[in-house]
Amino acid sequence: DQQVKQNSPSLSVQEGRISILNCDYTNSMFDYFLWYKKYPAEGPTFLISISSIKDKNEDGRFTVFLNKSAKHLSLHIVPSQPGDSAVYFCAASARGGSQGNLIFGKGTKLSVKP
Amino acid sequence: DGGITQSPKYLFRKEGQNVTLSCEQNLNHDAMYWYRQDPGQGLRLIYYSQIVNDFQKGDIAEGYSVSREKKESFPLTVTSAQKNPTAFYLCASSIWGTGNYEQYFGPGTRLTVT
Image (cartoon, rainbow over all chains, first blue to last red; front, side, top):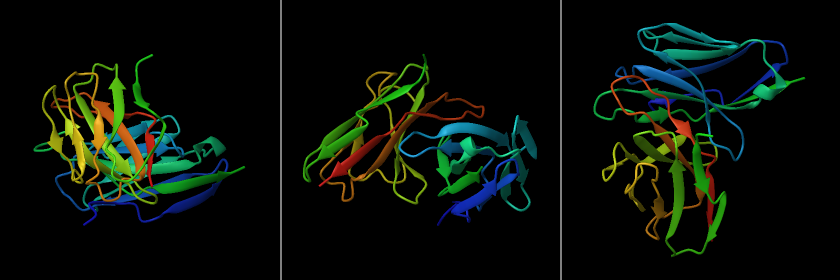
């Protein structure tokens, strides 16, 4: 059973426009959420995170929104740039028995066209 | 430069042979992790270690073994018992504590078993 779901395998956006990547989760014990960016044959790079006590966190062009009641989070990239083209993974953690153990979604491949 | 190194980047083995993947970090992180990524899939946790000489199984530990003799090093052995060893293997590390801490990833090792 997938606890973290990224239902869109791919997303194509024009340069300069907004990219919105979505993530849903089922485990109500998750209280920390992260987004990673990954290029082919490289390790994921941490982008931004959000704690469950917040509903928004912003870092430059990247903003993550959390809707706990809907068990949904999204990553907004504004404006999108060609260098943003990569696979984006959503991850979640439930501190407690497995502190530090991240559960990853399957990823969304973002293509930003010039 | 602080970071995580994995070697080699590409590894080829014959079926039935054990193979050990290296992971070293100089971030002074307590916790280290091994993940596996298959095409179109998210990252799945194999093993993790919170402190030296201690480690726990992740979601897919069968056919793998680890050791944590030094804080900086967390090698992964893919044994002949692993039924589908061909994959991209990622090592990560993080602070371990009561706060929220992101995991930092190495560049990965692509293992091909024929």
